Length: 134
Image 1 (tube, rainbow, N blue to C red):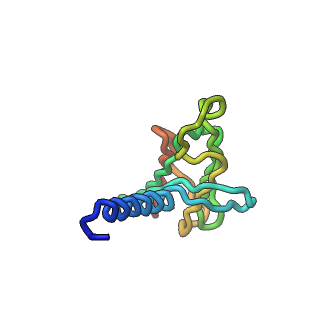
Image 2: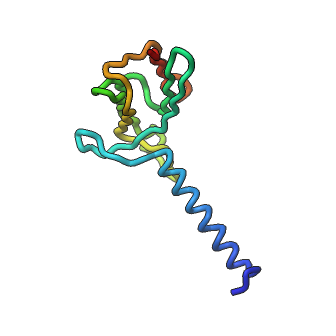
Image 3: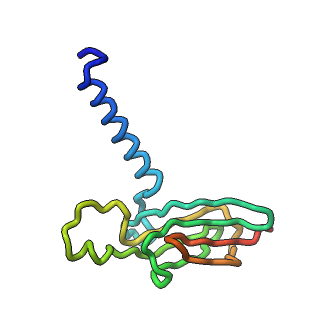
């Protein structure tokens, strides 16, 4: 086939889109295993430091505070819980489900042991944690 053949460039573009989608899925929703061996997904996390504080933002769409647990294990911060399938997904026909559900766990290593947040807020589908830097 010639390089200007539409089938060639359309196929190449389709492969690029598939590769991009797979890369984004791996980047944001890592499948993993928890200590209890239950299947899990890992929510994406942003961590940034300002003078006097360390901020952790965890994307948890649809997760209520009652289904969320934050604790320290040695030098790791562990954020875990469960995200239910939205109620519409149980009764109707599912056309697409991209937001993970079920048990999740995210471990952030390398923090001082016993670090406790000085501020914790669940807002707009994200968990905001602030830790003292010191």
